[in-house]
Image 1 (spheres, rainbow, N blue to C red):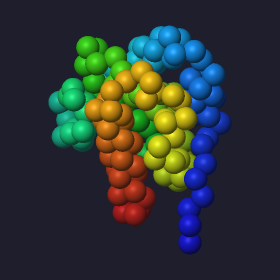
Image 2 (spheres, helix red, strand yellow):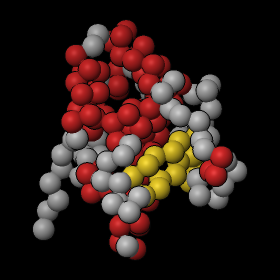
Image 3 (cartoon, helix red, strand yellow):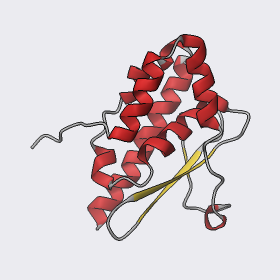
Image 4 (cartoon, rainbow, N blue to C red):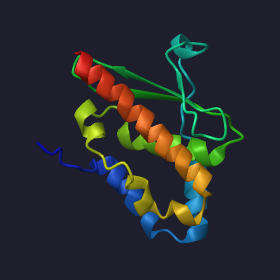
Amino acid sequence: MTTQTAVPQQLQQIISMFKMAPKALRLELLLEYSRKVPALPEHLKNSDNLERVEECQTPFFLATEFDENNHVSLFFDAPEEAPTTRGFAGILFEGLNGLEAQEILNIPNDFYMNMNLAELISPLRLRGMDGILFRLKRQIEQHTSAS
């Protein structure tokens, strides 16, 4: 059975905004999203529940939590000095936080390529984005297969 890939409306709006924006504005949008990453809650600070994303050039950590209806809460920890990586985390937070686990798993792994980010950031940073999404989905898959 094949899983249908779909992009939730809130993420699709972000993708469309980036896609339509001129190159200079896309960089500003990415920086704006870097400021939308909430601080880690106290229970996750210095926690073993944060997973490091090794593909990122800068120290980047993520964690997922689930409610009784399998809605996902996303948590990211990245230094302020890494605005492109934080920007991607902000996009994921705004576009995916609170969705059901399966909705996130159905998102295409390369959705961000439709945002024309390859014109703005290095291939190494794009590899980091792959790593973030891969680990995020892996954590969700592990949770859903265990429950």
